[in-house]
Length: 211
Image (tube, one colour):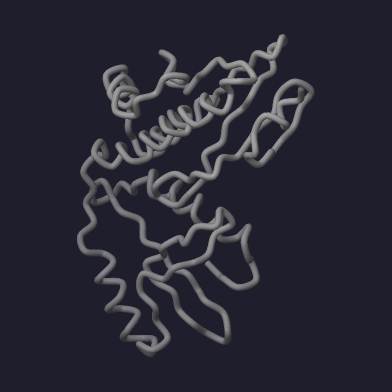
């Protein structure tokens, strides 16, 4: 039996003995869809792995997935078929009967990273920049043309929140803000997060929005 016949999740890439599938779940920030590689190792046995996606995701936020944190997430998620390896990858072994359970448990661990990460974030200095920007926009653009906390439709079928949108000549210009760790250092975690959000929006409809 082929791997694709064992799951209803979307196939993104397909190789000879490996497929990349996209789950129905997204990371909490409305960014990328949670995806896993399934490797066919023969005799109806499979390996499921996120290939270090979650640990890379945490790195974007300057967060380290320590052994203690990974163990805590495993316990809170009540997983049986998937776990974190020592190198931070989500990993599971399964046969054709347990593959579905392994994928769900792997997704639960990825979602745990997504939801727990906010508690581990370093302190950010925002200095009320969003309010300052809003005041500046109102001074130069009619207030009726400005939408705050605008919801844009993404390719992942989620509504992605953007701080500001300006309506001009039937187009919506989306404006994001980037926080700072200090007076001179931008939060690159925010930059990567914004890139993921806008990539999702662009895949849905590049003609409707300008950034």
